[in-house]
Length: 134
Image (tube, rainbow, N blue to C red):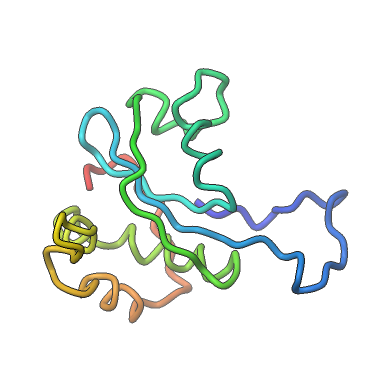
C-alpha cells in the first residue's frame, strides 16, 4: 500500500516539476495465479525486487515467486497512483483481468470498462486486503 512517509524526511527537498518522477500502477501475476497491485517509479526495478531473494519485494509476493508483470499504467503523481492502486484493489479478480490487454489489444471488457468504474470510487477509501485471491 502507499506509504505517506515517502520520500524519507532527510530526502525531502524542493524540486521543480521537470525532475518529478513518473509514477506507475502495476499488476503482477504470482506463481500461484493470484494478482498483486502496487505503485512504483520504476516497474522493471520493482519487478526484479519482487523476484529477488534480497527481501526488497513485498511480503505477499515473497512466498509466490516468480511473479510476472502483466499490466502497468502511468499516473500524473504519486497521490494519483495510490488512488488508482486502491481503486484497482477494490475490483474483483474477474474485473481486473477484464481490463488487461488481450492478444487483440483490448481487455475482455472492452476499453478498460472496469477501470473506468474504479475511477468513480471514493479515493479516500483504502483497501488493504492483499491476501484475498484477486
